[in-house]
Image (tube, rainbow, N blue to C red; front, side):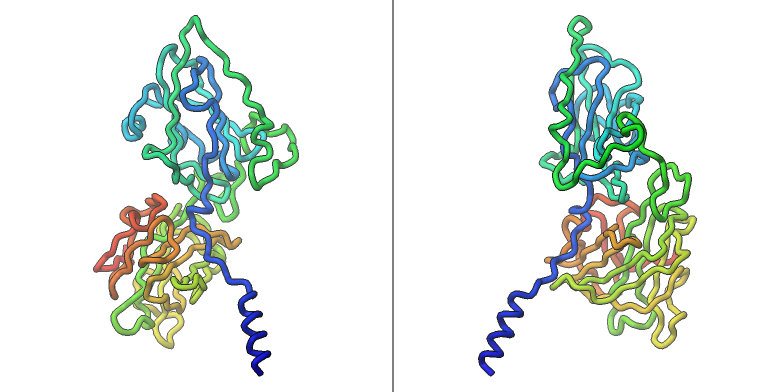
Length: 356
């Protein structure tokens, strides 16, 4: 009997321990390198090459997400400066974006290249700005004088091919070099969309004084009007071990409303189609734990789209939000605002607002 007990101990020690779910910050794309490097003297007709850790959706690349301004300063000052019209194209690798001004630059002038969180991966995740800088991705250059106009040395393509952890795909028709990425809609996104769609967790009421199971709890999503949510999942995660405790799968035909919201409500006891939450698009039976815990939003492919951790010591996007008191909800400071930090993005509301 003693031998059997020891054997069970050995087997349990060797069993694989489920890892924690990855945070949204870990899945978000990162800017690895900008070429020419910061401080290098520019020609008057430069081309910038930006290398990311994941494939970038070219539809998210425009004069609001990547900008070039004449001048230098703090991030908030730079973003108020006039922006130069730019041209964008995909490099040979889908993780490379090439940027060039439409008109020649002025000689002996300072220029700042700014990359913002509006750049998104092909999975729809915003750019991570977790870098050792308070200003975000700001790269400053100075152009050469008219009589000293220079051409930068060609960047050696082999230096970043393949990039870490992802082989360079075989050449495609047209080799993609200098050609825009095809504007095909992402899965679940209406055809012809001009901007990448998004959806995030906007508000949640997960705990009530007394019983939680009589149709008062809710999860509210906010995103691009009309965005399809077929087979998206809401998972409730135990803060101690990272395991799923409950969940809801959105049915086929689910879409963000024209007002940008989609409301999921708990059903009343013994009444599967009845809730006490007005205006709910979906009624299901669920009971999140009361914290410290987390809620995840996954797309139909199981990819993590958003994560809200509440209470100290839990996996969160950035730092966790506070653990709200019973009857209070957690709501984003502004609908759709996502800084990558739950503590900054969510506030406790003593009067939940699922009715819009």
